Amino acid sequence: MRFPYGIADFQKIHEEGYFYVDRTDRIPLMERAGDQLLFLRPRRFGKSLWLATLENYYDLTKADHFEMLFGGLAIGKNPTPLHNHYLMLMLNLNFSIVDPGGNNDVIRRSLHQHINSCIYTFSVQYEKYLPRPIERVEDNSFSSLHNLLTVVAETSHKIYLLIDEYDNFANAVMMSHLRGTDRYQELVEGEGVLKTFFKAVKAGAEGRGIDRVFITGVSPVVLSDVTSGYNVVKNITHDSDYYNRHYRKPKTSPPAPLSLTGEGEIFCLFRPGVKHNNGIILPPPVKERGLGGEVSDNV
Image 1 (cartoon, rainbow, N blue to C red):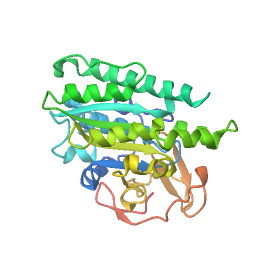
Image 2 (image 1 turned 180 degrees about the vertical axis):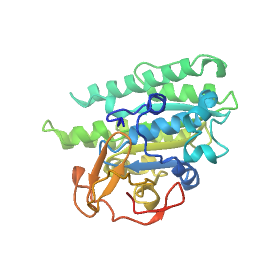
Image 3 (image 1 turned 30 degrees about the vertical axis):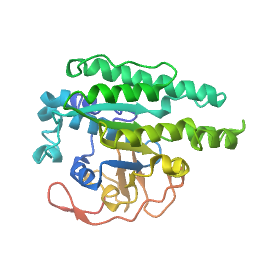
């Protein structure tokens, strides 16, 4: 059995036969939960893999691969109407790529570079669906995002925005010994670049082309500090639907009463109620129906 440690490529995992804990039955729950969602977990808990799962499920360009990728999974047996929707274009951002070093001007340039790079990837990927090129503004990616939405608005398509590690560089700045607190406040308050970004996302989701948003991170602190910049997101982190794992305990599992937390990137055995990675305390096992209909103990 091959475990996909450190692999966040959903398609690669399935094509190359890696072990995969099926969590796709959560997709309908998330669709019903809201259009703009925040999901927090410690590092190495498979957040990036989950975003890759959503990308493959919703992206209209992946429709021809749906049966291959999802046919044997829970969602493949009962897909939602939005799967590989003919309207859905995916815009992916990953804020762990933003360099937190240097002063805030350096961080601002790094953020704009990353967003502009992702917009360029978007324009190449969906070129045949767009009526004209997307103009990118080198020193202001928020204007580039506005231009992207303007171009998409001329079509019948909508945007699904995925943001991985939304708080990564901000947390690094906050913990820095180099005026960490001061530089952090400059990012999230007033006209700080991070607050301004989320104001742009909020505006884009008000009928201007962004249909859905899914955000991952490790802490709610940054979004709390951004406050009114993005006060429309729903935090589903503590919803019990996203704690329990539909997983059948293999016969070779150790006999100790442990809960298996399988999030794709790493598979670790944890004892419920005990502090683990980054201080998280896992909930006790909850009896529920597994995918095969049997009752499982979150193992």
